[in-house]
Length: 583
Image 1: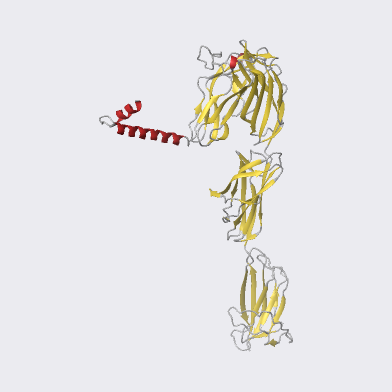
Image 2: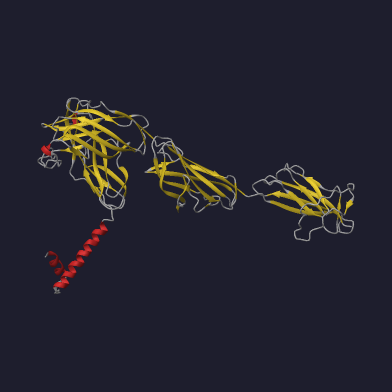
């Protein structure tokens, strides 16, 4: 056996018993299966042309009839993993000034799931001049993706410009589908066309769609001739067409036939499933074209340009707003952020993620674990990378409704204004404060972080004599300053009259300075002095009303209290004074 000879040749000079040979063959077989199993875990692309190589202009008058044709391929992912960043690229291999692309190139169609296929079309326009007749331009199309080998259509291949005869037996019966569509949504358009009853050896019936606005995801076609005939593209190669320009039979039927009798047609019904890629701004006209080859000539539908649609592609009706509460908030406080997506359109959208960029200046807030909620239900914590928080998943935003994602962050111990921004995504589109998919307008919210009221007291004294002796009067001044970011309310100062001194009635004064703080209410107490450090005022307060005249001494006064009814604003400063005498 070949397997045995292969193994024997690799073990030259060594004789193996039959049993040993069997073991080696089995080991080789196991290794083969291991490689096969490993291969299915990887993605791979295939490419297949799906359109005819014949295009053209009206045979009598180049200013009428079609001039733009769809040229495309089908890309399939034959592996077991999704291929991302799938991109088709149209490459010209020769020169011809009369044939040019008129759409997007390259054309990125996004991700392609394992086992899935997608069509990629490039509109090619023929310059309306008789000089274009019977000319050609060679080309090929490649499809690439992340982490997979690129694939290409065969070469040489070309587009050939024929003289197209207007044919009334080819007609567009109807072209139906929505006329107002939204970016990111998928829609179905149906083309119904009539051809000759028995059909043709070559037939294309297609909707001329811009690959900037429309992405064709699938096509389903039925024909009445032959009965029950179907197709998964708009090009029907019924006879087996030779597309190789180096072949002696180029542009002729060489077989094998792909439909019984080598013809297809009759009544044609095509269902296009398309995804809207971009907004049109103004309405665009969409028409259908029917091309055929029969009786050695090429034809198009005489009613070309009629029975079309006018379609307006609107931007996705999604906007994102962001809010934060509370603000202002104290340092180390917790803030709840809300990301609200509003869908003002008639169809549901599903977002793939929300991405928030927390601030890093004047400090960095910290995400509160397990605080994320979407539409009232707890969701997983976001991933944190490159200074961003990302919530990934499937977030449904129903038509005409809004949905909230909320989460919390703990603010730093640094006062200032903290601004962070957020966006969301679906497919390849960003959702932000506008519906325009071409701008970058993240939703933002600012939080003012403040320090709480922080009143500093400064107490000083002055004497009315150069030395402290009995009879010396001491004037105490208490200056208070609010060093916090927020106002203080219900502010009260207590002062215990020093032991071995006597309070001088009428000596209490108040200096508001420029603070604008209203004068306080002054109270007295004759409660026993506190023996704690710092001293503790009596609680409850023991009120005492001195009866003496101003300037007299009252040894019963042990405490003075100043109560401020007005707020002490941030940065405000004022002072109070009183006098005692050393007996």
